[in-house]
Length: 383
Image (cartoon, rainbow, N blue to C red):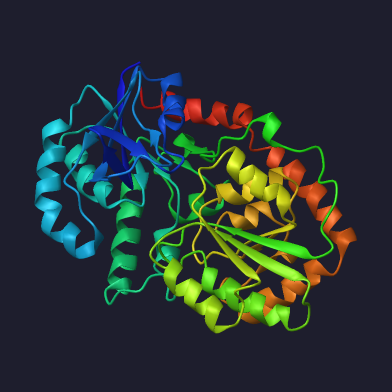
């Protein structure tokens, strides 16, 4: 039992001298590491905020925070890289454990420092950087360089790790193997309790309500493709609607797209939800969940939707293929395929009920009690 330092490429916020979050990375999330370690220290960047609305505390008993120089975007990261390296060099210790959640620009700096000082570390791989930087998901003139560089770094980081964990069962393991094959673990970061899983979805609305949940910071989850496919499906079935949950810098552009297509009365943007009961309440109001990401590890939101009995349409990418059957999958950037799949799902309640039952059973395999066994084995491998 010792202190574990965890790097995370996520922007936390500082309010009234404390660190907060709107995401699932709150104090409850980090407590799972206390199953094995005496103390958890999070290494990440923090930006100031002037409002506490919707925020949850990050730190608490047994959980602390180390701030690195704040950066936003590739250019800012490039100029702050030296200061970040200096800060990381100051805090590393051979008597502590290290876990890097990758892909991560912070891990790209920390991993060579750990190797140089002969300090072992673990990796939690939560996504595939090669897919993340595919054309259409990330707009930047250096997109191809980022795709090459981050993919290369993740392969190196995982290969040399003492042990590694993956959110998928086989997909990411094959792409990013650890040289210690007996030190590869598989578990999602989802927190799913028995009470979060319904016995059955009792009914479906006559006018089908479609749902998307995901970050709108980039287009990696293909929300633009979904909106265009919904518009196309609407020409043949007027009894459908779409709800978009999430926020980010691409939201304004997506709202403009909806307006230009004349969909303002059919598409609703709910913004960011705090998770938990808020998300489950929205899931229960809808009939079909859609997530056709260009890049994905294993989407927690889809598992949560399956736990509420929602039939799901997904893309042929990453861990989604481990959750759904082949006839639930479409090409992530094909408006035509997704449109046809939406129409198929919305025209067959019998099929929806069958898929609902199947998804509930799959979701049961992602309960905390089951995943905690793998989590604990991974943590213990680093002590």
